[in-house]
Image (cartoon, rainbow, N blue to C red; front, side, top):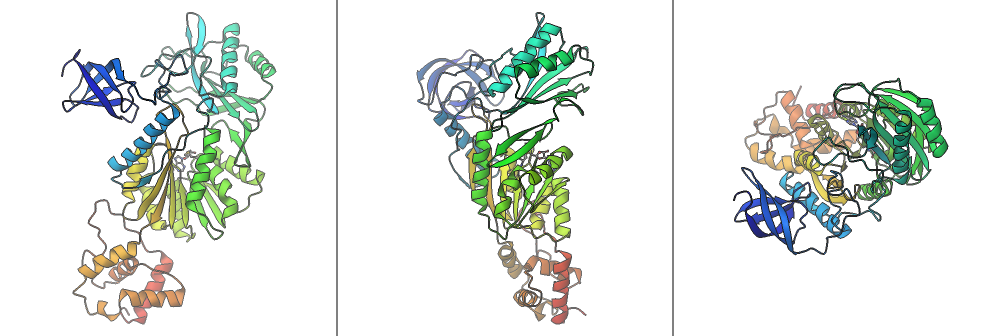
Length: 541
Ligand code: SAH
């Protein structure tokens, strides 16, 4: 195929970023703005090694899922690439995307439910940060044009809340009035880099943060006075200094100019305090759907001891605390953990403990101190969990894992890593980001019976037992330990301790045939119990 070729083709599927996939004589062609099922006359505009890019010249047959995008900037803006799809169309796209990613990357055959959609796909974002620039002597702000650093000057974004749209437009007006200059990336001059707003939908409290290259901003007090006068629901104004020369938005230094640096909001009946740097889910309606689903899947009871890993300001743990015996929360950002502790006190929850730590490292501590955590909720950032975290999760060995993710690709990778130990039972996609290609998922994992799995291998591998080994079967050792210590030990642990004592085992006693096998290690308490049993059965001195 070559550039300018025309053909009539049908869209059969989507790429992860929402382009239509059309096959023509075994060549794959990606076509923007095409919906699965539609037929069109297509022109090839780019030929690459493994695929082509095409554009629609004329539709021959249009989908019932097609709608006219509500936003004038839809074509230029890189944000809402699904705005040409109805809610049913977006549901189809998001459900397919999750299902296909779990199959392709995770090699998993897991039940994927239809994506739970937002009842109103507009005005949902409770946090907005827009870059600021100057064009023809006039301050502009808005999202970037797709694949560029050019700002589209837009005062009215359909997925932001009204407070953010109005406050941002007004700050821009005042910057123009007092000639407060935006930051110039090339020459490192000027001041304001981003305008950030946060809004508590349930409390009507607003936050304004100016992210600036320098502290010296002329007429800053006038700016604050005028904004607060116009928007009395602003509870706090913050100056964040960012001297970096890269794309990271927030700098380290936080100067509170008005109020006490926080706003409040409610989520599933609890009150929360939110500071500038704390993570707080951005869709207030759908976060309630997501958490409720996670709690339903976890099927908590009063004896459960739960770890809320990557807990942010503690929202998940606090929501479920009344249903279980004890909750631990771990999070890497210190301010978020301070907020989490305040949030627990604010809501009179006393069976929850928060710790600022790396989630994997914290879990290692839980294993060593024998915290009997039997349910783990995992909600990592886009990059997913580290192997260290997953290895410790396997060792901690909770009965159920609820894995929440905003990036199904890394979730699929992690579920594959856990495959010998945890089986994904069901995955529920939730539309937290209407009109964009992003989708949140919550997946229930249940523990596989690793004992059974290993028993089979051991029976096959240990047919020629040494004399010491023949003294007691694994079942007898287990029974003895359960009776004497009220402890359950796995065949794998017994085999590990036998090996430590020099009781010869066949080499393959615990090796799975799969790559990247992670082997849980016996805890000191269980090791002692196994040693007692081995002495009892006279297998060691
Ligand atoms: N569960 C929370 C936050 C989820 S976002 C909620 O629903 O609001 C992911 C969180 O993981 C962020 O707060 C981020 O700061 C935290 N995080 C990132 N890497 C981490 C790590 N290695 N250990 C612990 N927390 C981490």
